[in-house]
Amino acid sequence: MKKNKLILRFPKDLVDKPIVYKLVKDYNLLFNILKAQVNPKEEGILILELEGKDADYKAGIEYLKKEGVKVEPLSKDISMNRERCVDCGVCIPLCPTKALIKNKDTDIVEFIKENCIACEICIKICPYKAMEIKL
Amino acid sequence: MKTIKEINEKIKNGSVVVLTVEEAIALSKNKNLKELAEEIDVVTTATFGPMCSSGIYFNIGHSKPRIKLGGGKVTLNGVPCYPAFAAVDLFLGATALPENDPRNIIYPGEFRYGGGHVIEDLVNKKDLLLEAAGYGTDCYPRKTLRLNININDLNEAVLFNIRNCYQNYNVAVNLSNKIIYTYMGVLQPNLGNANYCSAGALSPLLKDPYYKTIGIGTRIFLGGGIGYVAWWGTQHNPCVERTEKGVPKFPAGTLALIGDLKNMSPKYLVGTSMLGYGVSLSVGVGIPIPILNEEILSYVLIDDSQIFAPIVDYSSDYPNRQNNILGFVSYAELKSGVIKINNKEVVTGSLSSIKKAREISLILKNWIKEAKFFLTEPVEKIPSVDSNYRFKAQKEKYEKE
Image (cartoon, each protein chain N blue to C red):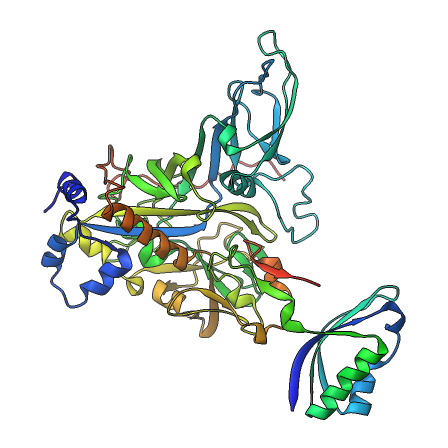
């Protein structure tokens, strides 16, 4: 079994095609949409968690790429700028998936990328602009 | 019993025993207080957090021909400065915003750049665009000015914090059913989170609750350089309810701090954007406490489990100045990450950085050990519990809004 959070970028001519439906029907993949940004005349962005048997997962990704969808792992996009972070921890209660935690021994605020769903709350609320996103 | 003079002698001859407050608390377990008070000479305390009542004053030198900015208009990187002094003296407050910042018109406002960020950029030795207009006089004929300036170009550049080191502070929660954006951070509805803003057992005034050693003239670590206590801070309020050990249960004493900006570091003076609220400046402060006797040490050793903060609703009680509190909680509980309010588990967030405070307490300890920093006798005490000095609320004589 394989399970990953992915960022899918759809060129504008693909935005009206039922691509995610095909992932379910033809490749037996489970998906959970974490975020979607779709505008009819622009590139669409879909952030989802995709899960399935290794072979299905691989075939599904190949199908996406063949259709012209750019596929990237999600964790790349949100990052913590250690130079800006002051380790206050005001972000911690607002992160819905415990991707931001305080190390109890060092009092350092740590960013656990695997838990991040890129909701971007931390980007908006960090008083020091220490959380960064590249879309 | 020791004197500050004796401690300074020990600093000079390298025999001083100086510990950070955390080290002192750890060392004190199962030890005799009297012996410890003889053994330890200095304990360093510290805090790092947003303090909106911060600002800088500076002198930009005279242009050729001369210009008088007093009574004129000045901006630094678009952020307005207060010019109403003589010709080229200026003040910039941490919360100043560019005229074209949308503020909360687009709610919640982002407040990406303001006074606090200008101060950080200045300390970071960046070039800043100064734009100014004066009205012209016979002795100051020039009317406009536009140039890039840098901290090195300034004559004096001085950080002046009119309020800092709050002795205890509220824990902010939201009892309403909609999200609110406050100076205590974003508060989720229905007790979604509880935010606090004190370093607790590390915080200077909580370790000297009656201001027996910290006073006017006390030399301190300020923003990475050396500063002094200039006065007590605005809103100083020593006569609030206290615990048996003398620790205030509400926001109490404050300090006004001053120091040379040119020796400070952007690591300890950081521009701060509070979503939906505004711009601020986070300031690092470290204050040494001379262990003159057992009593002073006994205050220093008060730990997070013995310091309590009031829980206040920021959706209605705080904005409407209702003196309601939802209970008290210790800093040990706050720092554990979860507290209980009305039988509900509430996750805590801190605005104050314990990590940075610890770092500052260690730097100050090393300065003292290396004889780079000597202690001072206060020139004057700040008002304590016997002063009857109180923070007054405004009298209600408003015109109808």
